[in-house]
Image 1 (cartoon, one colour):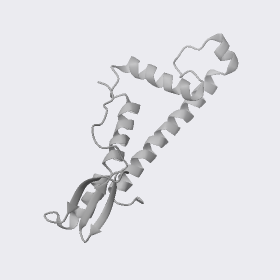
Image 2: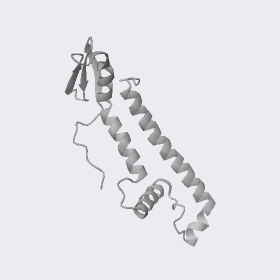
Image 3: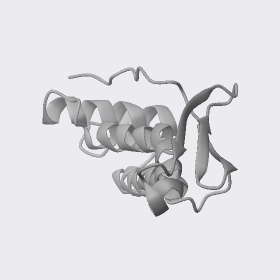
Image 4: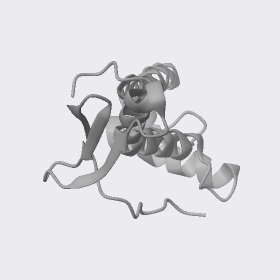
Length: 145
């Protein structure tokens, strides 16, 4: 399985109250994507509008988590190599567990490589957490539009 290309209107989407309990969901053009009203939803209309408007960010956060966790990889070796390449591209260090040449070891120790790895993984997790938290805040109507 590979990363999918979403077939929906790209975000960001914005929820805007038109009148009492009627909300418009627009994209950046601003193309109106849908209207959410209280005809049958009652007091949940505002929450539903914010949830719908957050759909692109929620999708991107889920996609980032699935890529980071290797859901699309064909097995542990592919996951190891994919993440090793990302780590090398970001830091210039070989991933711990990869054989380092004498030249590499002359430039940095295995301990330094492990320290860089730990800091990089922590940062990647923090980035994904922030992306997810922002998407959830928007879905709850807590983020500024």
